[in-house]
Figure 1 (spheres, helix red, strand yellow):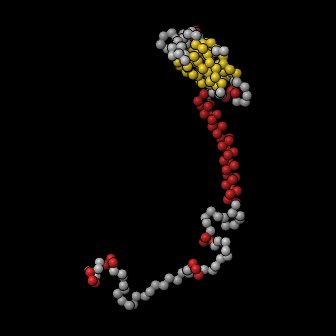
Figure 2 (cartoon, one colour; figure 1 turned 180 degrees about the vertical axis):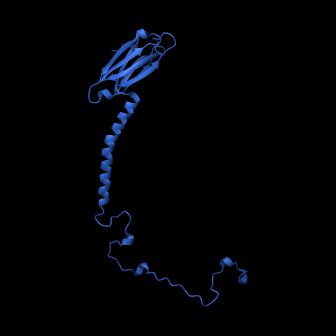
Figure 3 (cartoon, helix red, strand yellow; figure 1 turned 45 degrees about the vertical axis):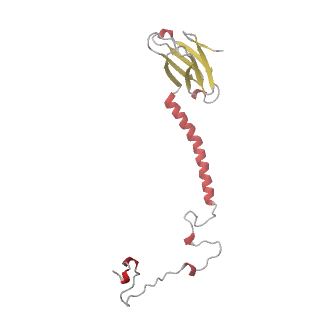
Length: 188
């Protein structure tokens, strides 16, 4: 135990003998360095992103250049990616196939529909389930403009459950074919 019952952790360290030399730190203090001109930075105070020479706005210019390059690349890459995804999903010419019960079938097989965009002309082929002789060709709208042959075709069946109408959707165009019970007729 230390003197007067104080624990050792609270007693300040004192050298045992007088022969212990003091260590003197001989590094210059910051206040004793050469004073720099107001507004100038020394090498030690320069930040990592600041250039060693040149105007500080060079970094801003490089950032703007990179932004313009990213925008230009994205305007080329995004449409290419969308076209490639449509090529994988719909093929070329753009084709969609769907099976659905529409009331034209014989037996338990659903009717098969193939919708195609052939150079901008939309066509739908219905193959009634169990009766391939009753196949029907439905002619849809003609698309105009650049890339009209690349628009995918979607089929939707709406209305009555046993005899639904067929809606052909291409871009923003919708064409509805009415189900007469035995075939489809365009609605005027």
